[in-house]
Length: 244
Length: 222
Image 1 (cartoon, rainbow over the protein chains, first blue to last red):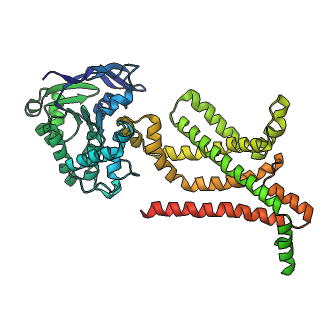
Image 2: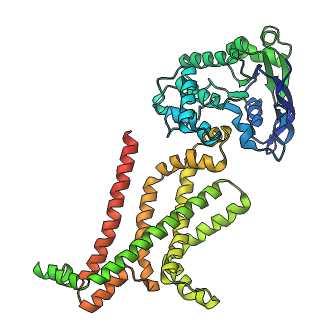
Image 3: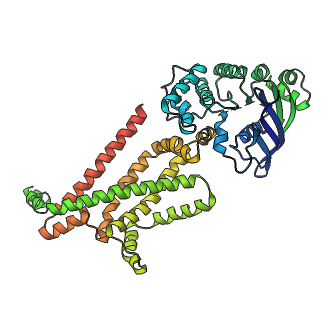
């Protein structure tokens, strides 16, 4: 697989004296699904948030489709419009209905006329199985439904890359399945995805590659099957035995 | 009883002095609407700038809001109207009152909006920015609509307080409703004109209270 969508080179990030990322290198090709695993505090969420610069890296570079987005003169808003992000706590806009949540970016970032934006928004909501909820407010939906709206909101922008930051960690167990199945469909449709998750079954089934992070470094990186069936690093083995 | 009505609600006096009120009324309304919008807009601008967390610009804003809120509005008006001419800047009493009210009112509004902006969860900004919205669009479409709902009660109280503080403009000889009423009183030796001014403030403020209450209720019901 050529065609690198994401390339991270020697990325460092510190919060005060605490060095959270200590030189990360990672390449993701078009259509690949990469899972980031690791104990909490290992830096996986920070790494994800550096990819669209919600966190500013201290050193190193991030390239999206060959363009260095950590460069100074970059138009960050343009870059972010092409990177979808899904958060642990959904972060839907509570004062807007579901459809407006999904179309906000289309209208105010891409400048689509309202009718066109809404047509696309409905399509996206149907894709995640919520075509009948367009006029509901987010707080009238279950957690699983809210997260699917958040996925639709990110997908509506036609992203080159989707980032998922523990998308199922805040959900009740019985609601996790519906979100994962949307993500699996998305992975099958050829979307490039970087997923921070504790869902080992998802990582095993849907991802091409898995990375083990610990203390700000990628300890092990391998095709998913190999990663889960015969992990090499001691920390990976320990971690997998704890979450399985 | 008749004596009371004769003193405070004397129709005859009212009719004789009606030109005073007509002029005072339009002046007061102009002052309230114009300086009110300026104060609110200025306060909103300050709070949005302050939330961007640029230290070199935040510090002056903090000093500004703290100092202006420590000064009596009356003193600010007097300063603008009677002191500035000494350095060659003079303005009409309407502008002196409007500027003083906008600068001081803006400081209060800025604090109220800021408190609203700060309670909105960081995730909202992050979600909006990750869609590619600029800082200002994030404020406009995502943060402020939520923040203003949160601060509606203090916003209302502050606005009522603001409207009443416009009455201070009589110290810079602005012919507002209160000033005109006092003049009418001097001419007629009756307290009725003052009652007119009081009724004016009630007629402006009370519907506002009801309107905001209506808004709040409709948010809660949904």
